Length: 97
Image (cartoon, rainbow, N blue to C red; front, side, top):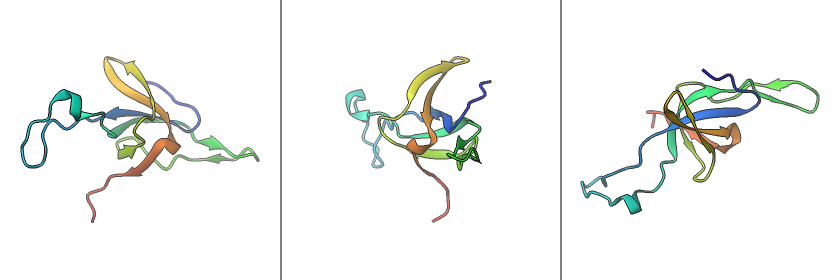
């Protein structure tokens, strides 16, 4: 396991959608890169100018939407993950309406 520092998060991206809602199979070229994933690890938080630590809002296990080109791809224990700063996360996906 990795212990992250600062406001960094490790995200396991979901696979890109292979079919449309109506069932049409998409060719690989048009599938694009998924912007949804599950948080795998979270850093300790970011420091303010006064030295206080602001805890991350995201937590391990959250399913999140993140910016399209955010993150550095890395491999940990044969898992393809994205390392990014917490501010690249747009929001947490919930089942509530």
